[in-house]
Image 1 (tube, one colour):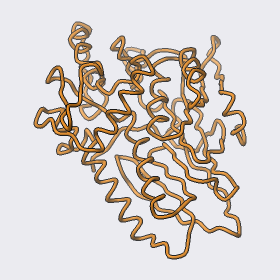
Image 2 (image 1 turned 90 degrees about the vertical axis):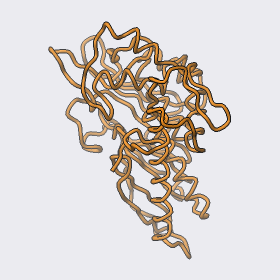
Image 3 (image 1 turned 180 degrees about the vertical axis):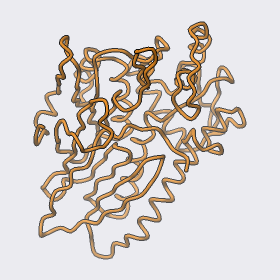
Image 4 (image 1 turned 30 degrees about the vertical axis):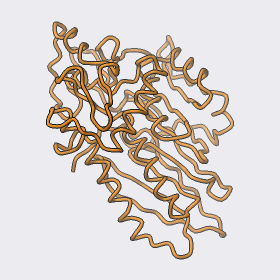
Length: 335
């Protein structure tokens, strides 16, 4: 199965259902990870048909946006076999372009050549050479891409587009929209740790856990930092504690700074972002991890559609946290 690399940084915390409402769950595999959906049962709801519709949508997303699928739209563009896009690609491209502009270029889907050179992604072989840095950075930049109708024009054929940092968030948006079209008003959609909810679970509130960002914490939910209530919103977490390698005693994270061409090395351990939609939450979580603690706080405070929960290490190496004002009211428990 083709896959996206994602960070499973949150886990759904499912409370007991009220007597007045019953819920059904749909689980499966997609994009190299798992998906988990909780929906309120309603008269006439055909779970099997809904599952089939969801699986068909997930296949469409894979065939458009997966860099692990050799025949996907994005793979054909990356290999210069085609310049034709589809609706899914164009929507992700435009969302990426907006967030790139808002973040001052910290979010950039053209980061692919640098990601590959550092040994992350589908070609997991580290071959970074500092003498290649200028030539690699010349392939990076959203200003080097443009849409002309349904065609994507690259300034250089060696450019490689990687939308993994927004694709799972975009996926939960599309799945939630599909479910909403059936008339369901209460649901939670989770793909690889990115979450989107509809409704408020009939007043109970949808609860989502944020993992503690410590090396070795590979099991979502095993060690939670906090739980938050997430009603009619989306949440995504990005961190450097699950995807990294160590060479000559130096830890290299999977988050690459498009400005320097190097993996980020700062004190920010994880960034959890709450936003109106999953694509924005996903992309902004990545942008914050590139930015570092202080710049991430500035972004979250600048844009009123963002709420953030940051975990960082202080000058003594001890774990600390910062949260925006809006998140304080959403925290249901600390751990």
